[in-house]
Each structure stands twice: as structure tokens, then as C-alpha cells.
Image (cartoon, rainbow, N blue to C red; front, side):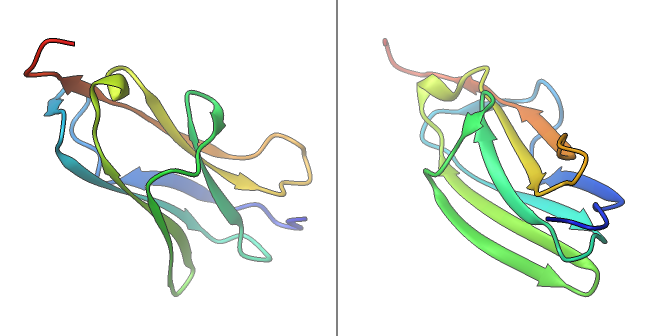
Amino acid sequence: ALSDPPQALWIEGAPPSGAPLRAGERLRLRCLARGGHPPPRLAWTKDGRPFRDGRQAPVAAGSLTGRELALTLAPGDHGAAYGCEAAGDPRGDPPRALVRLRVLCEWPP
């Protein structure tokens, strides 16, 4: 368990809020945490549930810990909330960051 949770947790690589993406587009999201002891274990979620699809890779640099998620967007990703959380927080409520995607579908469903 974390004896010291991260001071900050955020997601990079997401488009500006409300900016549309197209189905079939690739998106690379990076969840980053600053600090924490021991370094936090970062986990991705989709709509509040554990998400293990896509290609995930750990990222580490100095005091930053990260986890990258590479996705190919599908029509079903429209409105999806992708989140990242630092597991193992002793307070039982892990720090989280969230991004909601707007995916346009060019073909009939």
C-alpha cells in the first residue's frame, strides 16, 4: 500500500474538451503521477470499470510514474469516460484523473 499518495495525477494526450475524434483514429493517452511512496501503481478504467484493452506500457522519469494507453477508437467509445487511478492509497479512495471522449462515426451503425 502507498504510505504517501502522489501529489498530482493527470492525463496527457486527450483532445481539448468536446473536440471530436473519428472512429478508427488512434489515440495515445498517458496517465502521469508526481511523487508518491512507494511509486503508485496506475490502472486505467473505462466508465468506472477496470480497463485492460488497448496496449498499455509503463512510463517512468524522475519523480513521475506513468502508464500509457494506446487505443483505436470505435463508435462505442463516444461518450466513454477513460480514467486513471493510483491504486493502493491507504485512505481507500485512490486519486483519479478522467477524460471523456467524443467520437464521430462516419458510417451507419
